[in-house]
Image (cartoon, rainbow, N blue to C red):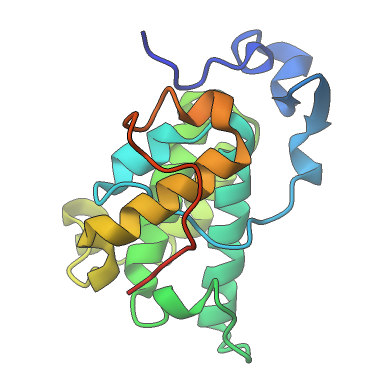
Length: 176
């Protein structure tokens, strides 16, 4: 059973397509705030982008955009959500573009504009062939499991269907 993009508001199209289902509450996608961190639950960024529920997907896009803007404009101080991406701006753009493309696939409004924002930060070769400078933490299974646990803490009913059964409910986030 594919569980990605199954929120009823996303499948109906039309006016309801700009709403996110959050339990019994429905929120506008425009009122979603960035996450404390930008989770990367899998070393495969495309797989990571597909695992998010709709609300967290929009939050992840907002977080990626905020981090990228801070890095691009050299805004200080570098917060804990920015530091892991400090030397990997193109990898962040690539992830943001994958997140945005997933939102577009799910018919979440403004996804095309979000994807365009991130694609401007990539050179043609990175856009076509991938990024050559990946953060080291992205291949560390112990780091990735903390990101899965972070998402489990946000919505255990959804993410326990996505992540392996032995994923802990809580672990402190790690980047190294």
